[in-house]
Length: 300
Image 1 (cartoon, helix red, strand yellow):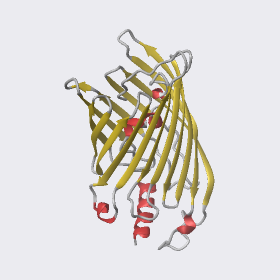
Image 2 (cartoon, helix red, strand yellow):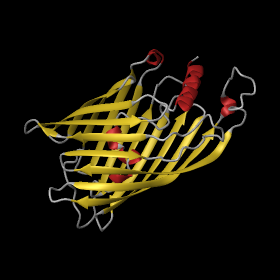
Image 3 (cartoon, rainbow, N blue to C red):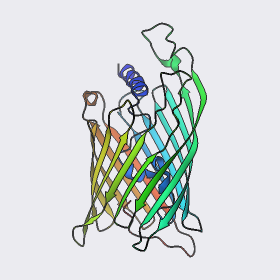
Image 4 (cartoon, rainbow, N blue to C red):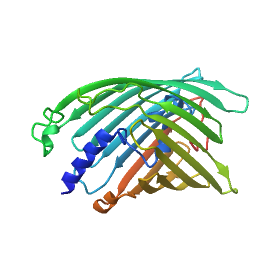
């Protein structure tokens, strides 16, 4: 029964366009995935990976892994990055490979305004023969889809200072079919994100961050996160995803270069009664080379 429900939910997902790209509770550590203008913003070479298992207890549940690498060039107004995403939901398997380039305008108050472009491809496989269907010879499910390639590109803008940021982006401009039909389409997503850090006392800081997503034909999406930061090392936070989930996370800044985190969230809809929740881990590392330093602390 759980496998059947998971497969049904998978195709509701594909056709409603509500979650074509994976959600992350620690979305604030995955900004390059949605906004190419973020490339190089940390002023060092950074690699970050997130692994998420959603609706644990279902066969065919969503499982997502993303790896992003980005850095400024020697001419530090230019940043470059690459992103890889592996996303599996039931019979739908996606591998996304994207490159990012940004250009930043620098201001005297230590803030920057960056513009970025993104380009790459989505490699799609759909194992339709693993489904039990109620409609014989459903034209959308007759053939398996193997290594279907959808190229795409997008752009973004990102303004940030040491204490706050705001950005907007559309990472995939082209709307293309998953399988050659007009039913299952990649839809254009529009993102906005804003956040900052507030000093409460010598030991504690507060970091609110929000991300919104608008997709034609899908409900408005809002992720709101707030974290307390203790002595620049421990992050304790909560997440609210509008009409979808609540979550919590903890992160530890083990050194000036290395941070790790763990998150969990639980759905607020009826499907929560049929799974054990969602779990996520995050690892991030800043590489420091000769004649460069680590700007610490980092909040976003």
